[in-house]
Image 1 (cartoon, rainbow, N blue to C red):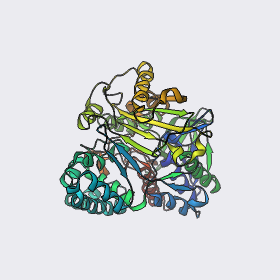
Image 2: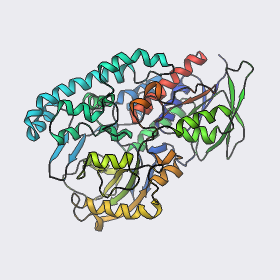
Image 3: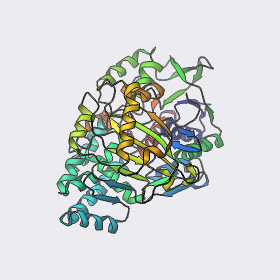
Length: 499
């Protein structure tokens, strides 16, 4: 086998998983990361003794992580410890209703009875439906690349039987009558950038994923999982280059027209040749900037410009000099509106006055992430992306953060006087720091018409040797999604190059 070189652009979980899989197959792989730390959206901030994971904090489907390490002949458990989180989420509504979302079916049903006894049977039917969707959508299709329309045609009858055309909320509402419980079992698309009223019912499989395996948090934070991937990659002989933003990729086609050399230029190195490139960078940035000199890329840019992009986020990282009792690791604080707020986030042109919040308190599971007697948090609020709402986040960000911290005092008494460090990350930061189109937090929105074959493909159809991983390609966002995108993409590469 000839000596092959691969460049992976971006060290998010998709890029890391792809780099590890390629290196394990004997492909000399160089991983380029623009920032001073690996991880992409899973960056880590450290301040005043606190450790803040910047991005993904809900780790599900550990089997897909274990697969990456097994591909390299290693064990995930030898690199990082995953701690179970229970409750998986605590859900709180303004009227005082509280629901602990747990893995145990008996404990879950007990809480359903407490809120709405009439919905017990409906929940059991919903759970059975979620498992059927999981068996088809995750087990069979989750890591299968949809490169040809025929791939979609073959899957269509199964998806039709599962009524993938319905929304997550609409599907849940067919089984469950109580509005609190409808929201409890339909909020999950928000974790991958989707509107529960518009995201395909295929995403109800998330419920079964969490019931099957639970929710985990790495000891040391999500950054410890990033470090585990990096150590696996370097143990396998891969090369990681930090502070190495890729500025341009020039494509030199070989005589047969089916293969090409990709000349990758960074600030430190010019025109370094690779046989293939796997981009974990933002999709639009990949085609509009990195491949700007390649004529075929312009067509993809036009297609991406017509696509619907996910919402953005306003995130506040903060540490307190006190600890709080009766705190869950993950808390969803619903606002006074559900559908109305989602309409404003996904279709509005301004910042809503109200909000729903996700509060992450990792020190509940791992106290080492803060100084003794202290608590580490981040709170995020879904907001419209920049292409929809032209908000001056430089001015609005601090004000919005103040409003959120004030609202949190209903759950964390005296919060503002106990905050000793804080950092705000807005849609403008997603756009500038992460090169995210419109400041989108989850790339292309997970709608049915933007899924599977209709999502940007794992292999570029017009530029030989260019492959895609991450939230923007199949199967989509979320840690299992981007890790399985690497499995799908590297499978395609292996077929193309007979690895």
